[in-house]
Image (tube, rainbow, N blue to C red; front, side, top):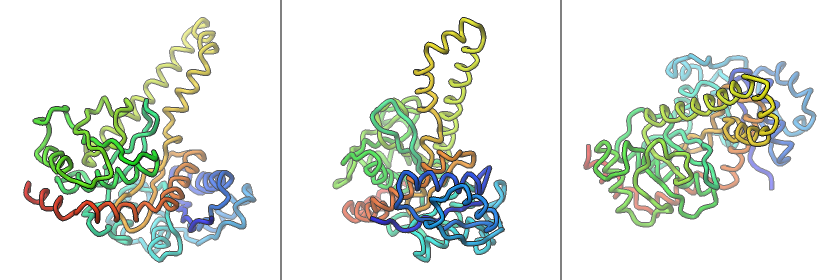
Length: 350
């Protein structure tokens, strides 16, 4: 079965065209159903394609030499949505020319352009950035919001839970993912009014395709005890950066320890299989591909520093969400749930 084309913002990210094209090519070697619209400088894209013959018949190039800078303000980027590689990739989803778009560019600009072009789904007030993180359990953890919304009310958190559960069902195969709200404690009295009200609304709701299990503290996110962690974008982004920083700290600490003496180097050779497994598990490229949930279309955000493997994983995420009809699942969940009742609960706390 062929899938809708995936638009690739070939100019985004730290290394731009080379990595974005090689990542798409790697994804296609694994799944030859993938087809692409490569948006960016035509000369540079054609040069990159010379190294990937498997992409020639599966790709079309949309020339564009205007790029959204990594430090550009979203408001400034919005004014150039019709001329930049990022904006044109998103517009291809809006027009139906492509089913999804992948970009490693400026996150704020990508969110602003996507929201303006695609709009939010009926029943969703704000889109949320969700990503997968490694855990000690049998599957990765879905966490949202990771920076799209710095302040969220009860209604937003409830909607994030619904969207996160739909995403988790696709990536884990679980019919009722375990969902928890990030909090400073697990007791019912802990947390802000919005967090406590969201918990009450989720406990009282019927027909949810999830198992709501209350609160989770930040040190338990990766323990394998939860499938979906829901929070506001401010706290979520801090938690994400802390987890990524801790992972880098552990790997750097091990590297320094194993090179400190001859005995340590011998110990490294003995334990190398285990350390390689740890490195692979903690490598963000193996979990790359954040998703803007709640939009009328699939937009996937790759790490700006992602390598070929990371971009290939982001492309695979986009393809899987198309294949599993993510937006349709969220729409069905909202309809079955009776969103208006939850909206009323959220409004009562304002």
